[in-house]
Image 1: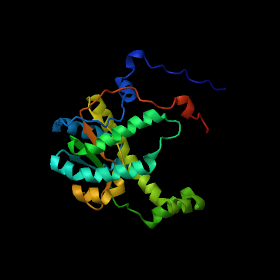
Image 2: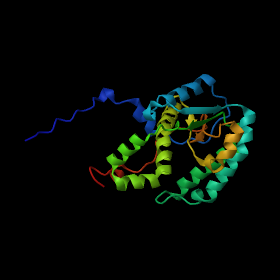
Image 3: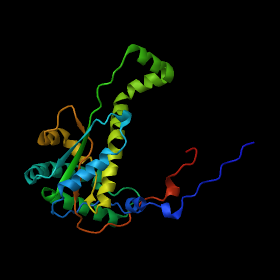
Image 4: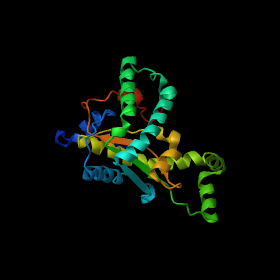
Length: 243
């Protein structure tokens, strides 16, 4: 007969301010054109670098744009991507979302689109896995471990596996960056709309062909106030032990 260990309670004094930071970390798209000190932007990238790294490979790079001319050059690309998004996926409010709230979000997106050239800073995280070192013995051992059905299935989903593997090495760092920005009083939001014109973005920023970009994160001082995020209740999304 086994008995369950008593649950450890978190002392009230250990409730971290991080929870308050996360619960008020809205996507802030209305930014003041006031510059952000370079040292502060470096702190954001430092927070990102502290994020998990698959296999500890640390194969990430961060392009940080503050030059006004470069930002102005990027503005037309941003507009094209935003317009494409609003014409398709962003055309209608998500199911269950209040139309008025969605209208306010679209207005903020359009504001950022129309004032993108005034964005104080833009951070573009990049990643590219090193070429894997594969040998026949290892491949055979992998196939034996997975079994023939799973091995065949993996071969047909390799592109998705690769994309998710790289993303899992990037997005935890991006979340760290967003948390650090909120903690420092900076506004930021993360998008992947630039991927609709990724080649043009990479050319404009001189990003090597073999590198992949995973987000575009505008950063600046907020024109507006932080506030509680609106999310689905935990009870609606959690599945305990099984779906």
